[in-house]
Every structure is written in C-alpha cells, then in structure tokens.
Image (cartoon, rainbow, N blue to C red; front, side, top):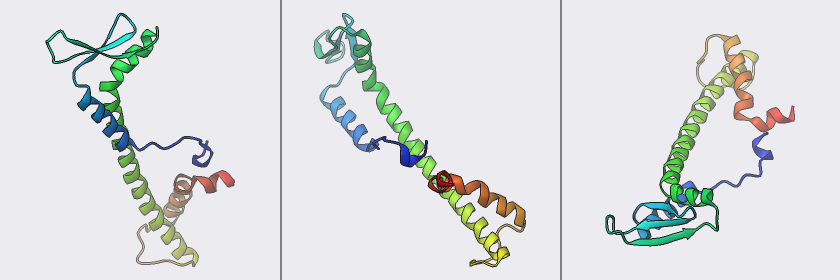
Length: 144
C-alpha cells in the first residue's frame, strides 16, 4: 500500500502527549482496576482515599486498558515522536546521497549537473539512483 492509498489520519503526537500530561496533572496518583470494571485512583498516595476515574460497563479488558494507558501511552507516544524524527533524518540522508548520485549519472550521460563528482564509480552511482528512487518517490514507482 502506498502513502497516497492510506486513509490514516496523522495525529499531532505532541498535542496528544500534552493532553495526557494535562489529565495526569488533574488526576494525579496511580490508577488501578477494582472489582474488575472500575478504574480508581488513590489520592493522596497512602491515604486509602479512593476516587472513581472510570467505569467500563462490565468489561475488565477495557478497565485494564484505561488504567494502563495512563502510564503506557506517554511512553509509546514519546517513542513514536523519536522514531518520526529519526525517520526524517534518515530520509534526508538518503535524499542527499540520491541527489549526489543522480548528479554524477547526469554528468556522465551529458545531462545537467552541478559541482564535482561524488561517486567515481559510475555503475555504483547509477545503481544508487535506481535503488533509492522508489524509496524517495514511492508515487512514481507505483505508477510504473
């Protein structure tokens, strides 16, 4: 499936993380499941005073999800933010290598080129262009 075929809505991960942190500021304490379906929190810690956070209408798995998501999702979102940043850096590096290889191929084949040769091995540069083009321009590869 190409990027253009997805119906996925891109989320603002920083806004999602801020929302979770805001909820955490208003509902501090450890959340846990009680009676299989109730999500409770003890506040202040050690006080034995419980506040009901949510009721999952008879579904223990939903209650467990709610209780665990409060601590698990911030970690998952931070990892996703980090992975997106790393992906962008790697795509930028691949684009730089691709542009330099394409420039060298153009120089050899009489096209428009700039600067000095980066790859002195023409077949290698040509192979880089061929291999990187579908990664950088998936929409072009899908139409071929």
